Image 1 (tube, rainbow, N blue to C red):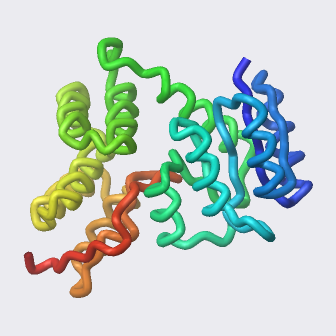
Image 2: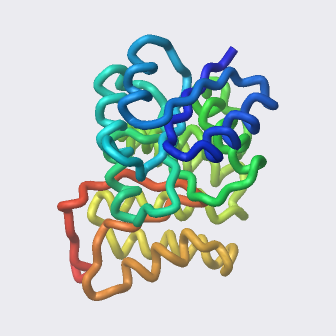
Length: 237
């Protein structure tokens, strides 16, 4: 059975998350703060951690650092109602696999947990459809395997060229390589397919600003890419 650790100082949030996940046959344990979470994580093995960003005492970022020192491969979903783009970027840089904002519905909770755990099981040899290629590409991005991610996204496009998501992700990868103008072309391609696709809208608007920064990259719904917070690139390059 999949074991999940929920670390949150709010009793109602712990109860909500536990109830939602136990319905899905997950075994859930809770911790009332960062120190309690680290103690329990040190004593037991877990497949996934849901971690609140803003807690008294040891906050989410510090707790995340300690969790990763104990097990660098543990999947951690950050939860917050207070986080900014910068804290999202910081948490992803430290190894968080995803980011969930309060308030959230039971369906959203189960979907994100199911998606993260399914992504862990993906094998490149078993990719068969558009969705699996896109999810595998996201996994590659999190592991900084950028060339592999590009190849996988191109495969996804060859299967279904009518979806905006892989074009947006290709734009993100081009940005990370310093190719801003080429990235903008990919964002425009995504918007040509779906003018309402918000991740591409956000990325195109951000890269078009005079004071362009990598911070704030949007990979999709509730999904943020790790970046170097100190790195800054001008759009004129």
